[in-house]
Amino acid sequence: MANYLLIDISNSFTKLAFATRRRISKPKRIPTEKLSAASIRQLLRRHKIDIVAVSSVVPKKSAIVRAAARGSRLLWLTPKIKLGVGIDYPNSKEIGADRLANAVAVAAFYGCPAIVVDFGTAVTFDIVSAKRKYIGGVIAPGLEAMTNFLYRRTALLPKLSMKEPRSAVGKSTIEAMRAGAVNGYRGLVREIIARIKAERFPRQKVHVIATGGYAELIAKRLGEIGSVHPNLTLEGLRIVANLNA
Image (cartoon, rainbow, N blue to C red):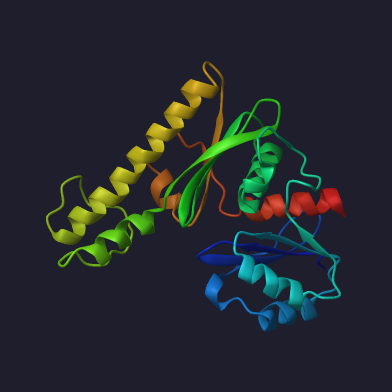
């Protein structure tokens, strides 16, 4: 049984999952460049779907979803629909749909105030106030973007696979890069969280939740992050679909 097909389209990967009103199935993760109308139609044939709920930051792929789901009820996550959280932001159209989904889910699952750190193509920090309002965020280069830049712009540095460095001091080029990338990235995340807390939430308890591709790797040695929720964005889509069903 499934009420919804949830589709979260980010720049690098797309997650798709069937969901009922209460839970989501195990997501399917594919490179966004390989997302096709045929693959979506194939999924829609498997279940009777009430709503196709979509979070997309890739306009070209949004058009593919629109064509593939013709005849189904499409729900695009935008600031104009019921979200369960408010928005305190000058131009709400600028907020990425995935960031709104994260705000919805963190408020529902963990409470407010809260910070969501999403480790995707970029790493984004999204903040929900104690009054359950999305109030803004921070965008920084993603971990792969940083390491791929070194690989592309230097003659001798190799392409890097991400895992925990053996020590703070590398004994090879690969280990030196890995130590710089992983430990340096933790420093970036720690500093941004500290600044957000000091400026927005002095002397308040703040829920800090991580999601996205490198959340497990980076968060496991960051005491500032309280929990890792791999499917936070999809859960936000499910909640929004419930609110707008």
